[in-house]
Image (cartoon, rainbow, N blue to C red; front, top):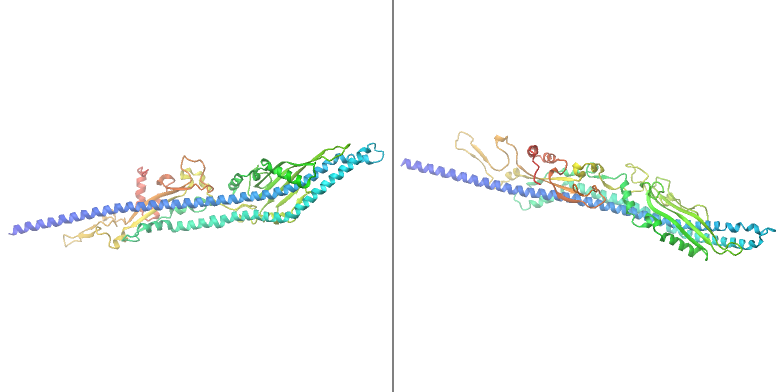
Length: 539
């Protein structure tokens, strides 16, 4: 009887132990399976955060590029306005050139005036010479009256045009201050606060019984886009932006007016119809002009600069006098050079100028209001942080220091998304039903053996290392071009920025910094060990 009872007792103990073992194995399977699934979910969140942050950076860079283009467009418009102002004064200089050409054309008749003296021996030339001179003087007076009529309307038209040119420059500056600077400051605040990452993490754990256990824990993207040390640098010199504007002046009236023949035709037709008496003929020819930015009037041929906004025109005006009477010459001609210059600088530079030569009524034509007042372009915006004089706005530009670092993919901003799931927090909230923590106490005289499959700490054999932070890392990059593709360097003039996920070794590595910043030094050590063995990750 006793033997039977003992047999039944042993069977029962074996059954209980077997059931316990099966329970532990099932719980381990469920725990491992759930953690693998959750690791995949955490990795998906990290990928979403990395890509979204890269896309946000790319969008902001594209906005910077579009605003830079708008700034350049405003400056090109300024060059067009200055060109129209200066070409209008060039028209007045052509009226003055017609006066000078008439005076040159009168020289043969003045040479015959001595024939009016008694006993000259050529008295037959006296009447026609005096008559031709009188006719030419009448034509000169008509040209002077025409110039006076233009002058009466000039002040009311040129002053608003000059102000418009100045306001175009101010508008371009506001695109930097109220556009690029404010937009980039907003972007930096969002990156610092990890708004995109927090929003994705919040959506990812919506409905979870363990709310708040997932968090983003990385700010490595800030260093990649920090102005001055990252991919962006506020521009001080603006030289290549000036070059971009010079190349963007699409209309030949602004670039080279000698390739715009209607400019000469318009001057010829206007003066011929309004101030020349037929059959006399006036012609404007050789007109050459442009609107650009430079320190000297060189038609942007010797290197542009942001010192001054310049428009200059020069050419020739010719007159053929066809009203002479025999025996005097019936035809006589003359030609006179014509030029106009507009140079506008900032408020601290007194070298502003707007003048044309010749004037129909004086040697040098100028505005009634001083050029320093009328054509001033406002305060130099680089005061204290760059060189003056300058009429150009500042730009948010790409950091040129990174353009010589191909191993660092030319400084194109890479971001690490480090997403962590805190299993210690879950354990404190009760945890999953298959996460067990208990002790085997088969002998009342000792504390027994602890069983813990919660994944919070390793056992004493491994030093009790804290492994409660399930960590997923993903790498995103905002790129302008890839290796071996376009030769154009990254810049903030073209809105061609895109986003993608990349491997960690796409540039100079800083994965360990991201892991150390996330308080998972053990993961950083594991990464270094893997790299030391030649591990390169999945392609």
